[in-house]
Each structure stands twice: as structure tokens, then as C-alpha cells.
Image 1: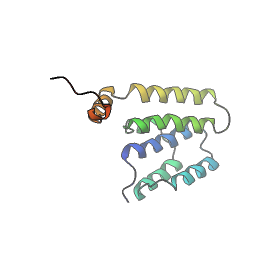
Image 2: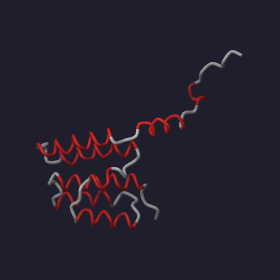
Image 3: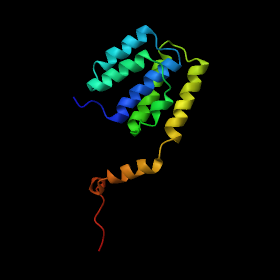
Image 4: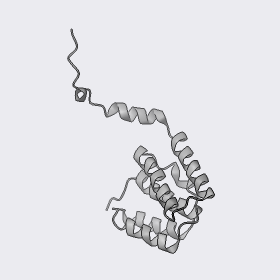
Length: 134
């Protein structure tokens, strides 16, 4: 099995590391993540690495630079918020982590690369513009 893209895979590693850092990765939350992961087409190697990550706390800074897809970066923030709010409270340290994540996601991303990708994916005919006068 091929597994997820490197970007998407590392997004999940960031989420696990954030949960540890915020001290919300309880045994119950670990099982919830395993249940979620069972529905995601990870490769065998990716699954093994996630199990190591669940067992061993790490810093999310180690993985965030490998989350290169824009949607994966957006999802990092969304899933982090879900995990931090799962107990109904957003503590001070969780807020700090979330602010750092949001800053790193938006400021450490090359906007020129994003724009290149946007330009290459535009089909001029999809705009239904009138023909140019010659």
C-alpha cells in the first residue's frame, strides 16, 4: 500500500505531538486517534511510525516543515483546535500552542510557491470570457 502523501502523513504527526505537548493525549485520546487512523489509508511504515509517535512525546516543530500542502496546513490548525477543545476548555498553554502553530503555518510558508501552484491550475477557458477583438 502506498499510504498518504508525506505532507498529509506529517500533518498527523504534528497533531500527535501537539496533543502530547498540550498534555491532552490521554490513553482514551490515544485510542480515539487509533480509531480515526484505522479509517485512513496509511502505509504499513506510516502506521508503525504513528504508533511510535503515540508512545513517545516529540516536538511538533520537528514535523511542521514537512507539512507542505496548503490544505494539510489548514487541517493542522483545525484538528489542533478540535483536540484542544475536546475537554470543553481551552487552557492558557493550549492557546499559546495554537497561536504558535497558526503563526508557523502562515508565516513559514512560501507564498510564491502557493501562487505558482494557483497560476498553473487555472484554465483560462473556465472563465467564459468573450473573445478578444483582433
